[in-house]
Amino acid sequence: AVTAPAMSHVKLFSSGRSRGCIRRRIGCVKGFPGRTPWRYLRFSATLLVQAIRLLIFALLVAPACLYIGLQYFRSPQIDRAVRYGQKPRQFLDIYYPKEVGEARGSGPPVVITVMGGAWIIGHRIWNVLLAWRLAAAGVMVVAVDYRNYPMVTMPEMLDDLDLALAWIKDNLASYGATLDDSPVALVGQSAGAQLAATLLLRQCQREALDLEGALPWSPSMFKVFMGVSGVYDLPMEAEHLETIGIVPFLSHLSVDGDLSSFSPSLMLQEEIYSKAAGRHPAVHLFHGQADTSVPLEMSTSFARALRKANVPVE
Image (cartoon, rainbow, N blue to C red; front, side):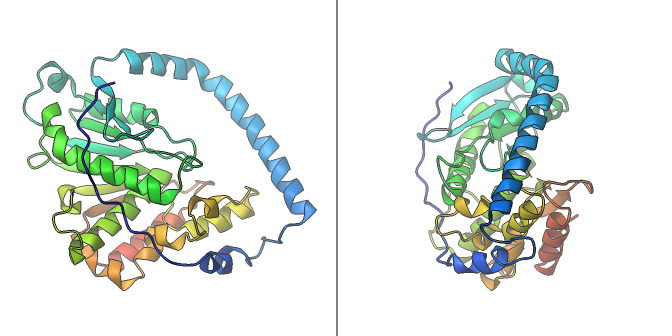
């Protein structure tokens, strides 16, 4: 692993909201009948079916995954497992365009990617296919890893990303890219989009209040934020998972069960975030209409909230 100097950072503040706000949102909705034997039987059946489907899918894609994994570990165009912090999973991968990989000179465009994985099975290697295509187009890609649940909960995941962005700002020049001169995009997918969008809004708010003087990184360093199938309203997602027979687990991602404070669509309803949103980069949202895991309404409602806060969004 390539080791880079660690840097200090300030942890994100946490919300003091109570568990009650989430119970009101997901505890009494239609289709949430309470802890009945039938409910547990339904969840168990769903889990068994999904496990069988996952096993079949894994067997079908195993040959392709083995090939991709082999290429990932052999490629000279990737700096793998670069440390941005000293805790577990605080690594990132840097993918170089061919010309930069041969002679690391002038800075190319930069894309910083944050993978999904339901906050549980995310890993930076999930970015490999996207990163290879972008690198082939002349883009440097930085794939950020972060700790998952149950190792940590959502505040610590955000702390990891906060530290990673600060490290990238301070150290990427030594890898061939200058953020001040290169166009930079932040890309998040699914859970990664939720974490990245939440972190951007919090950093806008921190910067507006200037609570900590010179912050380690600024939202202005990004030309655009691109969210792919993002989960921008966690209480809504909790309701949706209940309707499709998935065991409710999202409340465990927050110490006190408060999901609203980690939901960008709901955060923008609060004045402290909507007023600070003028510092937010432009947003491009992508979402499949047939997505059954994360409803399309996640992105359309987030887009409405962004437009209401005067953030450019497409």
